[in-house]
Length: 144
Image (cartoon, rainbow, N blue to C red; front, side, top):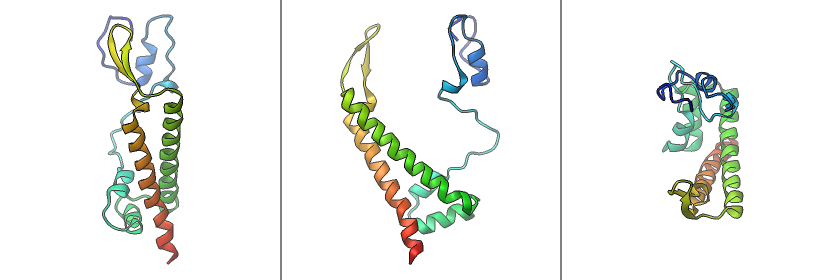
């Protein structure tokens, strides 16, 4: 919290933002975190991507096993596909203007421009392509 008067454990992002030292502005909307609920998280994206059956079979499994309504399932998968594409394009653009390099930053700490790393670039490109291909196959299989 920047105050030095308490530990690092906070019950929520709201609590963290409300306890920062005076003069430091921290908006909950800009903290990259999410609140865990008591309910189990649904791993439908991972289930779809890692499944060994045909994409259409995996899609049908999401409807049955993950209990995602059919009206929502396709849209959720499509949005994730678009998010992966956007991440890949953003990282590519960032690498273009901020090339990968390792160096010293601040108090002698080593800093790496991780998102410009060619390995990270290739991984996001591959992930975006593989997921996108699998998503597109759902529609192709349904057309038959």
